[in-house]
Image 1 (cartoon, rainbow, N blue to C red):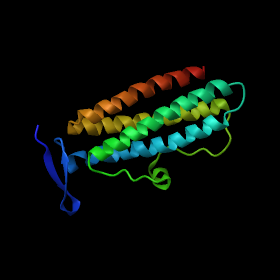
Image 2 (image 1 turned 90 degrees about the horizontal axis):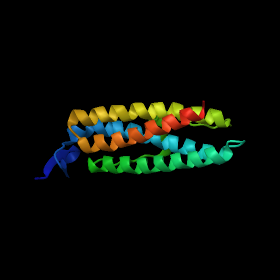
Image 3 (image 1 turned 90 degrees about the vertical axis):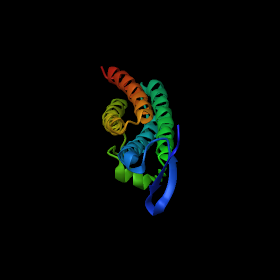
Length: 167
């Protein structure tokens, strides 16, 4: 397979395996949105992990840690996928807060409120993933689609688990 050379702003060339800068622009926008939401979600999960109290402490302390470790891995995978398209994911916390639809949590929450907040954020991330999958499929980018489908499958399982916890 021959590598395609594509010109972007300032006539800067980068090599892709079949996608142009314009082909991947919508994918990158969607991945950046997902990245921002994951960044804020990661911080929220760390906060919950550190500040959980009460009878659910041991169980939820461990579950929040599992969740933030998964999110941390996903953040890296997404950022590296953006780099594949020749774009740098320069994200400060300020930029993440501007782009994210997930709210920070500063007030104290009960264990049940924390789980409800996680479930609310799962919905936002789920929508982000579906939008990014749509952009990838429109372009024929099956690698990004597969990556995101893997995220979606894991997210749906964790959503079921956290939902079951509330029953």
